[in-house]
Amino acid sequence: MDIVRFEPNESEGAGRALPVSSLPFFFDSADAKAAKQFCRKKGALLHCAGYEVDDGDLLELARAGGAIAFSFSDVLGERGFRRSILISKMRLLLSACRKRGTLFIFVTLAKDATQIRSARELAAFAAVLGANDVERKEAEKKLQTMVSK
Amino acid sequence: MKPTERFKRRYISFSLSLAGKMPAYSEAKEIIHVHFLSFFGESGISALAFKLVKYDAPSGEGILRCERSRTDEAIFCMACLSEWKGSPARLAPLSTSGTIKRL
Image (cartoon, rainbow over all chains, first blue to last red; front, side, top):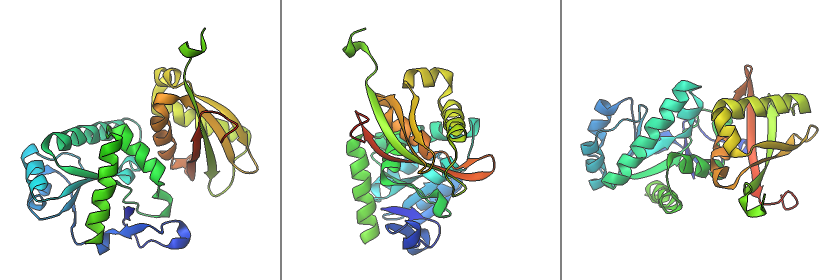
């Protein structure tokens, strides 16, 4: 299961991908300040482009049954030193989520078909960020339940 | 050196495409080597036990080797390749195995 930013087409290999536009509980924010307003919404799926969310907001998000989305297309959009800083920020946010009991999911949020990645690649992405197998499976389950609502 | 002291290896089969075409062997080798080197650095490559084992230019498929505990990092690195010299490129992992024969 994956979430993308365009209308997926089965012929492009995006059969199990859902467009962001069909998910009313998905919220995009640029930074921690903007993310604050979405953390109290029940069952919110929050993508913060800066990957900086305050610990208090993570706690609120966990209480509201929400989750943080880690996007692979954000990694593809950066290069070199900036990419390494982004991965480092993602690692820090994931460890903060673990500490506060906030769930997280791994998606591509692809802008076009070329940015779509396989389940194995997303699993590797999760492992590189520091998620273990149990957390990864839990993330998949959480995404399934959020989407099926 | 005892076999137990050597690197534990994993082989990853992949398919490479550059602007929708299969690149020639020399170009594929350059793409993979430069991309892995920029991702891992010289020290990282040495710990990764990285090697391009095989590449078949007509099909665009090949095999590369890495250290067992760093398979996920190698696959993530492959997934991070999205363009090469301005053209869209894709290095997609197909399967992973402990032996070349079983790939």
